[in-house]
Amino acid sequence: MDAPSPQFDAYRAILAQHQALDALLARIDRALTERTATTAEVGELLLQLGDRLAKHFATEEDGGYFADALTHAPQLVATANQLLAQHPMMCSRAQELVSAVEISPLAEPDWWEETTRRFRAFRDELSRHETRENVLLQEAYGRDIGSHD
Image (cartoon, rainbow, N blue to C red; front, side, top):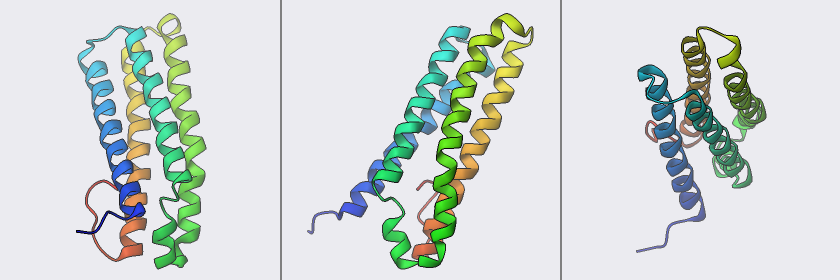
């Protein structure tokens, strides 16, 4: 049996990161919904999210995640560049969540509701971004690669 290609190894690494991010997102959502964590613990979870997201995006960018796909479908370069350009903005948004949590307990009486609203808006934005990455890869290869890239 042949050894996996470098592209396959990169794909598996990205998939593992997506699974870890999904698990962390679910943990944060559960903590906010059930109010099972302190505000400090929620802040720590959001800080972890920002760190993991930055590492995930760096892996996508440094590993040339789209490079192989774009050799198959160079017409998708502009779309790939738009997606990659969203990474710094999304990392900033994740940091804004942490900053808001650090300030909010003192400033907002509805801390749980507001933090949950902000988190879910970010989670949904991240989900749309990841879905668009999946669509790009599916278009490039002309096949369905599953629910996660």
